[in-house]
Amino acid sequence: MTRAVVLPRPRPEIEALPRYSTASGVATVRWRASSNESAIAPSPAVAEAIARTGTHGHLYPTPFSDDLVAALAERLSVPAAEVLTGAGSLALLQQVLTAFTGPGTEVVHAWRSYEAYPILIGIAGATAVPVPLDAQHRHDIDAMIAAVTSRTRVVLVCSPNNPTGTELSTAELRHLLDSIPAHVLVVLDEAYREFAAGDVDGVELLRAYPNLVVLRTFSKAFGLAGLRAGYAITHSETAGHLRAAAPPFGLSSVAEAAACAALTETAHTDRIVESVRAGRRHLRAELTARGIETPSSGGNFVWIPVGQRAAALEAACVAHGVSVRAFPGEGVRVTVGERAAEDAVLAALNGLTSDLTARRPD
Ligand SMILES: *Cc1c(COP(=O)(O)O)cnc(C)c1O
Image (cartoon, rainbow, N blue to C red; front, side, top):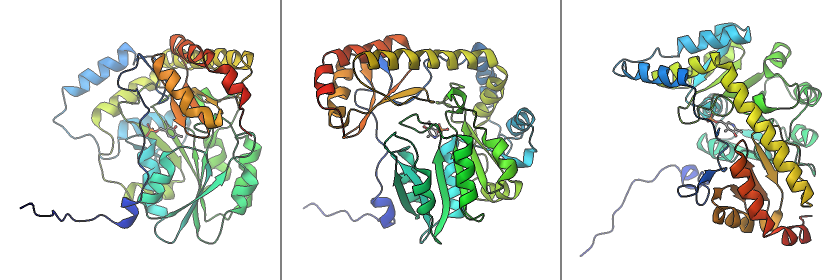
């Protein structure tokens, strides 16, 4: 006789959460263009810092990554009290949502945007209020302003936006910040800022708008996605609330040392950024030549809005040895920076192009 196993159940919100997806083929393909990783490995100096710190792995780091906070504060010319670190900028976003939202509150964000957003909002027990992108795949700032209610605690802005690559201007961000109540936090996710074409600087905006939280990461332009290091800059009082909402020792000593070393390796970061800019130019030009228009991208990826053909394009890419991120019915996001991977995507497209242009979305 088998007895039914009765297991404890989590909160209903947790059971209902969408799962963070993994791209198809990612474990077996030759090239990974599905997770916006850098194609370039950490520099020798960073690898050396990782190895050296590993030998002290029996010791705790400082609770709030004092060395990295000091290095960032100096580099950004802000007081250390305005800087926080976390195991990736996503951990910091979770701290924001834990500290400032919860059941009965709302978080306004653009959609399509980063797929982790609705998941983290759901974990916090808050209600996500997604606002559709406009026809140019950009945040619809006026619609986001209109979506703010008395229940709104956070407005989450992603610029450059993942997965469409579109950027907001400083004027648009000022318009948003001027139009919403000062007691609502605005989180500006600048994960891709180093690749951006525009001149937006969240830290500069923070001077005029103390209700801003700027999120940045070492995962993209610094090439440390596997080490998990991100940071936030915000008003010192808000920073204190965010520190209170996280377990101490959020950043490992190894990640902290790697991030500190990466900050000084500017030539290496420049190389990553240059390879991304070249890849974007190459891929977008080749797509245009095939009759496929893509939005100009400020990220380390290109958005191919092929609508209903997204799944077919993803399958063709995997067959050509490269993983990409498909959003069924919407499009495909391709990470750039490695010419062979970009060319594999183009080879995949060559077999599909007539089909794709014949059925352009909307
Ligand atoms: C990649 C990415 C991040 C980075 O997350 P980490 O936790 O720092 O690795 C944050 N926001 C967006 C929109 C991203 O695409």
